[in-house]
Each structure stands twice: as structure tokens, then as C-alpha cells.
Image (cartoon, rainbow, N blue to C red; front, side, top):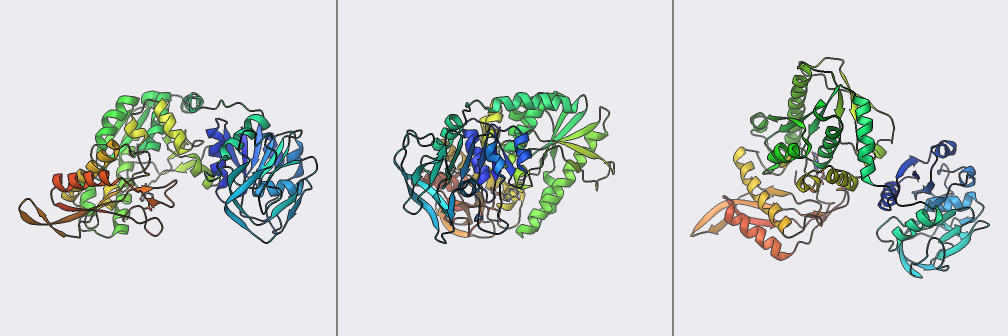
Length: 514
Ligand code: XMP
């Protein structure tokens, strides 16, 4: 394991992902973890992340010198680099001047461990205030910038390395290569980690954990819950029951996909609850987006708990486990705790014992999204499920501006299916993050179709590119593809006489319209 020490500000996750891309297993630990505890994990190497602090700030995170004396290879980046310089006796100047963004790096020692085979001039991503002006004793300076005299240093004998910039971000053109040089050449690691190992490990662990008892899992139709369920099904077969609530707000073919393709691929025992009427009743007359979300969330929990109670009430071994598709970023963001958490089940539904507690099975809690997709693929899940784009829990309910009715849902489903079909046909699925299709049900527009005037509704296309949905840009789709989608939707979908394109980034717009 390579430990990535997190000094804050989101960099650690990206580094951990890049290390895994290099096929070396990595885990994130907080910078507050005592060095002895880090070393007790027997790390093959340690990477110190960047962070927002200055080494001169009061209360800035520190590191014990012993970390560098344990014989474990260490790679410091940005703040990690400065900390390393300071602890080991180099000079870090509190310059006050800042260097942000794309910077030219001058490699002065091309044959070094880190820079071997990379160009003498390369673009890197900088973000720092302080600067290192003298490397610690025993270190060779291998790169500089116009502003920073020591932008990289290396000590092959002690296997200690550092760079002032962020090799993990895309804008550092040879960043991945430099990182791999540290892992393979500096630390002597071999690229051998694969998601295949995860499946074997998890299957064995889940079998041991569950024994002959039973587990349940809520399927949303999304990637994470599907892969988690498939993995648990591989381990315990029909001791797992999946529950899928069809709230009638899914896109065309999605429920059938879960019912047929997912079951076919996994052999899982699936209970589909048809709750369309219940949801539509609850949503009748409601146009306010927040109110819609609340109603959908509330009904969802009720239906799910009822199904859960029925499964638990039947004769058979105890149902003690709840499967969840929690991913590594969720774990890290919520404090990175290890061990199995116990959650109390909602006990506001008749039939469920007051004090019932489930143990969680979270087989994906060490994986990033792209790794989950790989696991899904290896488990034989269909491409349409594994490569599915994010789809909000409230479904099409928040893609109809205005009241949600069955008729409007059917109309939107048709338009959405056309857009998805054409985007897939054009090979654009991987380049866009997601493409909500929105029906402006409260807006009417005049058109001319056939020989007559029509008074219909506009459909909005909202294709976006993003890395994490926190920010997004509108996707520059080819005009021909947009034209085809527009022509088909206006020809094939009754009541729609206009297709418009949303060209707003996030912020200021959110991805969804409601
Ligand atoms: P926004 O619209 O906030 O969406 O920019 C960001 C991402 O989250 C998805 N989204 C949701 N997902 N339940 C979900 O599971 C929700 O209530 C929900 N609202 C938005 C949205 O599709 C996008 O990927």
C-alpha cells in the first residue's frame, strides 16, 4: 500500500486515484495521524499531498522527522514538498509572492529518477506562496522555475523526493510519468494492482461475514448500487434480495433493464415494487421543485421500508445485512473511518421491529468510480448499466418544469430516449458527463407543423462535461448531432414543437433545471 497523507484541499483523492491508475494500491490517511501509526501500516511508500497552508502559519500541519528516517520512500508535493524541505533542514522562504496556475518548469537534471525521459521544458501546475530556495543536505536539485530556484529535489540514497508543483493534475503535462517514476524507480514498486483482486477479496470477506444469514439491497438503477449488489450476489447468491422501487419517474426502458438484464447477468433475487400510481398521486398539483423532491424522497423511503419489512417478515434466516454502494470518496469525505458502521434502520414503518439494526456491507468503499465500473464489467454487468451516466434519484420528476403527470412523463420519456439514442450513435457517451432532457411543461410555444399552427412545449437539451458534478461546462456537441436530435424530437414527439440548447455552465446554473 502507498499511503497518501492528506494535507487538505481535495488534492489527496486525486493523487490516490493517479497512484491506482499506475496500478499500485493506495489509501488516504489524514495528516493528523501519528507517524508511528502510519509506519505501523507498513507502507511501501508515502506521498505527502499539497494543501492550503503555509509552513509558516501558526497551526499549519506538521510532520515528525522520523517519517523520513524509517527507510520508507517518500514523495512530497507542493505543501508536502515544502514541509519536507523544512523538516530536513532546507530553506523555505516566506516570499509573500504567489505563483498560481500553469508554469514553465526547467528540468536541470534530465537523467534523474523523477524526470528521466521527460522533456527539459515542461508545463506544470503551481499553487503556492512560499518557495524553497535551498534543498536539504544530501539532495540534488533537479528542476526550477523562473520564480522558484528549487522546484524539485531528489535523494536517491534515502529514497526521498519532492516537487513544488502538482504532478497529479492534468495541466502538469508529464505529471503521471513523474509520479510513476517515483513509484517504480524511486520506491521500486511493480504495477500489479487490479480490480480483479478486489472481487476475489470481497467475495471471500462477504461470505465469511454473512455466513448463512441474509442481506438486502436497494437498487436505484445507478452504477454503484448495481455493482455492489452484483458483487454481493456473487458471494452469497440467493441469500441476497434486491429491492427496486419503480416510482414511474424512470427513463424509457430503465426498469426493464434492471428487471431483465441485471437479473440475467447476476442471477439476483429481485423484488420490483410498482409504485407509480402512489408517486403520481402524491405529486398531483405540485410544481415547486423543492416540494417535489421532498415528496419523492418521502414516498421512496416509505415504499422501500414496506418492502423491506415484508422480506424480513417472511420465514427464513435472519436478514441482518444491508448492502450499500458507498464509494471511497464518500468514505474519505466523511472522515475516512474504518471498520463496519452500524446504522439504525428507519423504524417509523409498521412491521419493522423498533430496535432492528442492520450491519452494512459496503464492498466498494475502497474504490473510485472508474474502478467500480471496471469491477462491474468484470462481473459481467451489461454496458448500459456499467457506463450509465448519473441520473438523479427524483428522476424525471425534476425534469418537468411544472406539474408532473403521466402524460407529460411519457412525452419526456420519448424525447429523452431519442436524445440518448442519438448521442450514443454519435459515440458521445464517454465525452459528456450527462445530458438531462427537460420538458418545459409550463411554457408553450407556437409552431407550424404539417399544415397548421401548433401550440406546444419546448424541450431543453442540457449536455454537460464535468469531473465531479460540482462544476460543469456545457458540452460543445457537433451541430449535426444537435440537428438530428432536434428534427427527430419535433417529428416524433407529439406536442413538442421546439428544441432548445442550454449553454450555461455550472455555476451559475445547476446541472438539473430543478
Ligand atoms: P445539480 O443539478 O445540483 O446536480 O448541478 C449535480 C449532480 O447531482 C445529480 N442530482 C441528484 N442526484 N438525487 C440524486 O441522486 C438528487 O436529488 C439529485 N439532484 C441532482 C445531478 O443529476 C447531477 O449529476
